[in-house]
Image (tube, rainbow, N blue to C red; front, side):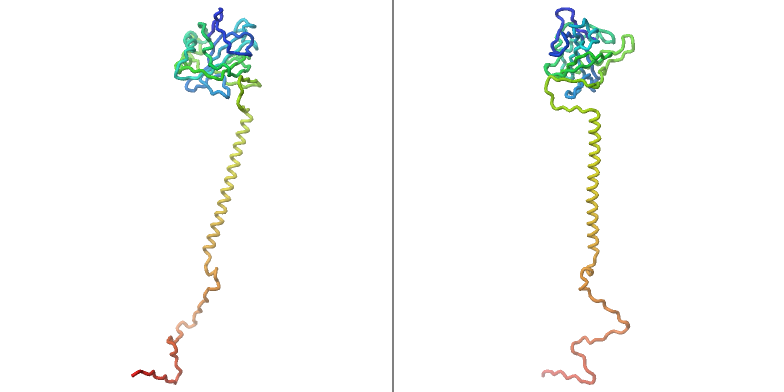
Length: 304
């Protein structure tokens, strides 16, 4: 745990909460959740309009007007206000984060705490503090009291891969005298909204958030639509094949029909066979050469 000093007049105060924070909020603690790279899904807050990030920084404030300290305030419904900053990794180091990372070696094991010198906490935040989501929620660590007014900025900040690796490898979730367990993937999984109202400081585009039942209905409807489309396509294909097959059969029948069946009037009459195959009809082939019996033929005159 990294505690921000608030014992004198030079204690850091932050007006990043803008309106809506309970009483006079004093920054008291910085916490960070993260996932091992390169998976990079370690943010505790996952708004649908902001892509998932590698880590998330929480600047925890407590209501100093009503409660004497952080321990008392966290048990009260209006006790805490947390600023959430989504963190991405890049090539360049973020100088503001060294104010925290340089002291991680003093809180390596569970149960340890350290106070760090005063610095401008606002340097940890994104430049655009006017775009954020706000809702009433809980702490991300046990006992998860429902005592937090969350403010999550939409603009992300970047730290280097080296800085991210330090977050992943320096801290342990175990006690100092126990077997060391590296503190990684220490983010809380997204929780149900439970009828919470999420406010935004800017006009939202038309973003439709579907419930589990609506998603199931959409999936089932899409599957039924695909099945119906497949049935229609199959019916059309079978119909086309049927008509093609019928057309081919007609062409085959027409091509096998004899031309004599088409024109029976010009078919020649069949020649009858003779009863006596040995006899042949004798016919004088010469023209006008048939003579009568007993009649002499006139001689043919010749020229001298």
